[in-house]
Amino acid sequence: MDSSLQVAFAPLALDPKEFAAGDKVRVTASFLYTVAADTSVTVQAGPYHYILSVLDRIGASFGSTTVSLPRALTPTEKQFTVDFTLKDIAAGTYGLLVEIPGTDLAVKQDDVLIVSAAPSMMDMIGPLLVLGLMAAMMGMMAPTMQEGIE
Amino acid sequence: MALKTLELDLGALEVGALQTYATGWYRNTVTGQYYYYDASTNQWYVYTAGLLYALGYMNPAPKTVSLSPGDKLKITISFQYRGPAITGVLSRWAIGVYGALGFTEKVWATPTIDIPANLTSTPVTVTKEVTLQLPATGVGTDWNDIYVKMWGGTPDIGGSEQSPAQLFGYENALEIIGVQVSITDFKILDFVKV
Image 1 (tube, chains in turn yellow, orange):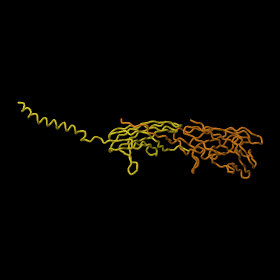
Image 2 (image 1 turned 30 degrees about the vertical axis):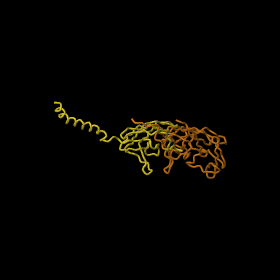
Image 3 (image 1 turned 135 degrees about the vertical axis):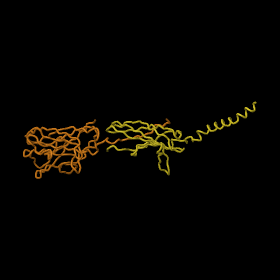
Image 4 (image 1 turned 180 degrees about the horizontal axis):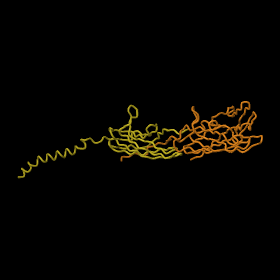
């Protein structure tokens, strides 16, 4: 029969890795393909989790790339990378999904993206505030100390 | 670019009054295909799977040939002939789409055919082959039909391009493959922070 798009959920053995919100992630994936004329496909990747057992993509964090597929009449391996940035994502553990939109071609693995929350504004400026406060206090105390020396 | 082959059996080529067949069975010595000819109705029948089917314009293909865009298809026709030598028979060989609106040609060739004389009482098999090539792009999966038509020549076998003396084709003779991408063994190999 004529070639048709096929689903291939292959068992994977990826180890979970830790990331922080805002990190950029590069996924390397591959597939075997055949096609009679040069073409290309769009591949997208990103995190997902389940809500009431339904796969929910964290859309804001998805990235995509175009993969060129030169004519190949026998199954030919194509390796490619897709980058995405962990945006608008809460701390938690997520699955990793790589898919070709508009088809049922996808590969995924649950619970491999361990995302910690991005540092808050207070986390980033807190130490500076403390230092500033200390400097201000030292400034206020300085005249008193000079008077004591005299 | 692969080369595939397909044979079309035209039965018998009729050349006006020069050609006469008696009612009975005939066998194409090239393909081995059996035919039955009914002289009273001037109708040929093809014998397939124990049944007789009247030969018409388009017929069920005896086999399916898989072709990818860019592939070549060698088509061989054969027919039984008895009569004088005929030169310059015009012919048109096409791959296309056969549907409610008739046959839409997509790829074709228009060679001339010379038929040697056979003035014996026994028809001989005449063959002719032409190679057509599918384009590398733009091929539809419905380009699966094929036909050959013949007319003219000296002496004239009759007919015209619009109403040929011989017209024979196969429906669904081709399977166009490789037009869509087929992807398997989809895997995530690694993922890292960059």
